[in-house]
Image (cartoon, rainbow, N blue to C red):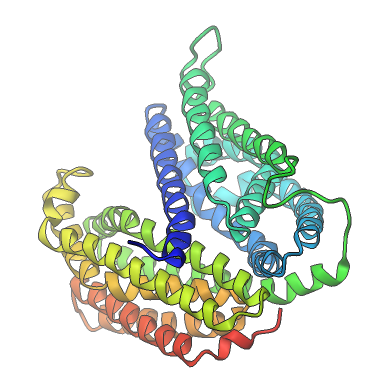
Length: 438
C-alpha cells in the first residue's frame, strides 16, 4: 500500500508528466505538418523555438516566484490571497506581453537575419512569427495559469485542457496549412494561426475553471504590490539562471556543431529520445515544488523536506528504469528517427552514456525544483552557472581543441550531470533552504 504522502506526490506528478508528453507530441506534429510545406518553413518554425527560449526567460520573472508564493499561501489556507496574487500576476504578464508583441511583430525579419537564416527562411519565418507575436499575450497567460494551478496542487485540470487544445491544434493545422473544408491553403501562416487559436482555447478553459468556487484558485481582482515585489525578488534570480543556462547550452551545442553534421544530428536525435526520460523527472519536480511550498506555508518543515525525498526516490526509480532501456537498446530507439549509419552511431553512444546518468539527473531535476519551490533561486542560479561552465562548457572546449572525439564531449556532459546531482543532494540534505524567506 502506498502512503498518503506518496499518493499526493503521484496525484500531482503523473498528470504533469503526461502534459509534458503531450507538449512534446504537439511540437512533433507541428514540425511534421510544416515540414510537408517546405524545408524553409520547417527551418523557420525550428528557429522560432530558439527565440521562444528567450521569451521563456521573461516568463520566469513571474512564474517561479509566483509558484513559490502561491504554494505557500495555499499551505497557509489563504486561498483568497493566492487568488488575488494570481490576478496581479496576470496584469503584469499582459503588460510584459504587450512589449514583447511589439518587438516580435516589428522585428521578426531582423530576428531571423540575426540568427543567420537564409533569405527563404527569413521570408517564411517573418510570416510565421508576426502571427505568433500577436498571440504572445495568451501564451504568457497560459503559462502563468498552468504553473499557478500546479503550485496549488491541480495538474489534472491542466492535462485535460492540454489534451483538448492539442487536438484542436492538430485539426487546425490540417485545415489551415493544407486547405481543407473550404479553407484556402495558408502554409506556414496556417500553422501560426492554429497555434494561437489553441492557446486562446487554453486561456478560456482556464478562466472558466477559475470561476468555479470549487477550483483550487480563483481570480480575485485585487493587486498587492507587496506580494508582487516578493515574486520579483525570487523571480529575477530564476530568470537570470534560465537566461545564462540557455546561453551556456547554445555555446555547448556550437562545440558539438564543430564536429560535423552527423555528430550534431546524432546529438539532436539522442536529446529528443532522452526527452521521454525527462517526463517523470519533470512531473516529480512539479510535485516537489508544489508540496514543499505548501508545507513550508503551513510551517511544517519536516514534512516539506520529506516530500522532496519521496519525490526524488520515485523519480530516480522511473528515470533509472528508462536509463536501462537506453543502455540496452540504443540502436532500436534511434532507428525510429533516422536510418543514417553515422547518425545512429553517434546517437547510440549518446544514449548509452546518458542512460548511465539518469539517476543523478533525476536527483538534479527534483531537488533543484524543490529549491525553487522554496524560493531558493539564488542558490540554484549559483549551482547551475558554476557547474555548466566549470564542469561542462570549458572542459568540452578544451577537449575539442585537443582533438578528442565527440564521445569525450558526451562523457564530460554526463560527468557534469553527476557532479551537479551530488551538489544538489548535499544542499538539499543540509536543509538550510528550508529557512528561505519569500
